[in-house]
Image (cartoon, rainbow, N blue to C red):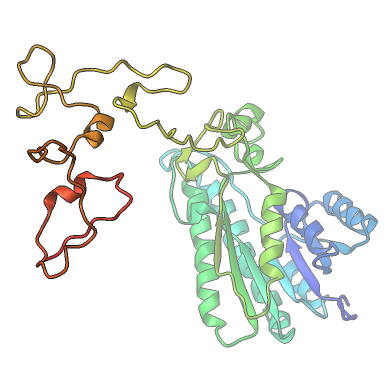
Length: 366
């Protein structure tokens, strides 16, 4: 019997390659610390993955299992004494024909491995998961379980069914110590998924990822699966959709160079132009524009030859008296007083503001 010690046990189906193998390696690592039971139909593949885990200091065991064989699944469940985590990863896609031209046998095969395989293993291990007191079921879905696309009718139908299992099971296990997590990857480049779908045609399989700079890989999904499993017991990640940056949607994939790559340049700041008559023409290192004639402003000033006198420069205006000098031998500008003479009522003096350089501040009195 497996699971006699206190080390938690994680069962991973379809662990011979791709996402399943990467997930098993992650769960057996030092960060998670599970004893991983790898199941798949190819004994040599799962034996190699289990050997790698043990070589890296982890704990693993390989078991040959066909998830579509209910009798074999029940026998496998009886051999376990404990199960804390179940990762339903076994699945696949076969064929890319249209609905009108597809083979019903491909649809049946996809339904059996994706939907019935998940159902068989979940039903067989559910009593152990509940008995663990802190069980976790992970269903490896797909974005095809939400959005249909051309040439994927059978796979889309199967993944919709798998999504229905996860959503229904979560409702039915409410109140039980079991979490149900669904992972829905988008475009993931693995060694066998596209190759199996196109029946061994490597050129068509490579064309799926042609021009995509950084599609997801199996280790990206394994990292996400391990993260959801190792959350605290009260945290349930119901559904997690993960796509590469190049895939904005199921039907929209950017192929080619990524626009705007490289160092992020800081935003250009507008220079602080000097205070001059024409700021648009002022640039650092360039001479200021020549002074131009001021426009006609209703008789106050105008260009030469217009008949109107030009206003004197500001320095000259500050030296002029505010009003005409008083008659007498010693005419001098009238300087404003800081306050009216004693006994004389105050009066407004609008000309006092014409002396900005006067050291005595002017005041107005009502």
